Length: 301
Image 1 (cartoon, rainbow, N blue to C red):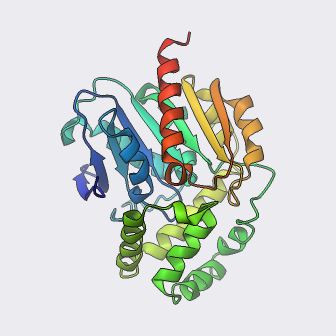
Image 2 (image 1 turned 135 degrees about the vertical axis):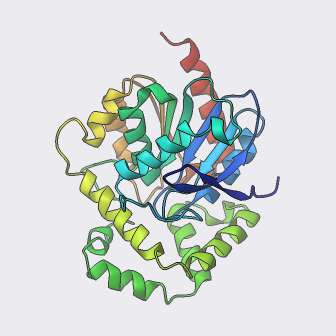
Image 3 (image 1 turned 180 degrees about the vertical axis):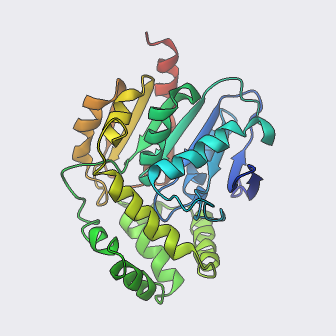
């Protein structure tokens, strides 16, 4: 299967770039990427699930080929509103949505998906999270620099300087940080990722989208009240699959114990020999775990 082409969906108050593998009459799975990623992060998993689910992977506002949000809201809650808008527009874009959809998120996309599931559980049939970026007492060793990058002015200068590094080196550095074994990345996805880095270098808003989303994510860790991330996690009553890579240097796998405590109906799995993007590194295993969780979720009381 070739890399699915991205298509712009006009949702009225926003435009989102979407990659879709259609399967009419099958349940819909919506997939949300992480910080600095795009819908390309889901292509390997889409290949595993083709024909079983109507697969929809979006570029969050300001990422991939999606333009920035008109309201400038890059927080997990702000990105969550984009995901809700996409779900509500599925029927208008050729997808017969007769009920709630399955939702899957990686890293920042996991935090966004928790916002959606906790606030709008009526829209979500099941929730799957891969290395979700949720508040945790331990910082992954590959993330120790992010608080500095988030500082206004300092982060802008650092990201601007990093942009002077070649696109090939930047792309490979991201892969090296996200994979336990970088050689597992599909060759055509690698090529598409490099093309995307080159295309985004020409966009005036790409740096702001990254930094504002990082600051929004970190700010959400310190919120109070019922909208705190783990409170929202506890508010979702449906079946949940949470996957952590044992070799993830970005999200500490020891967060698994907290996920097991907070979600109402969780299955938490630690994947050996796996980094931050299990759906790219071990797509066959992720597909099997997802199928199993969804199947059991239909019959669980």
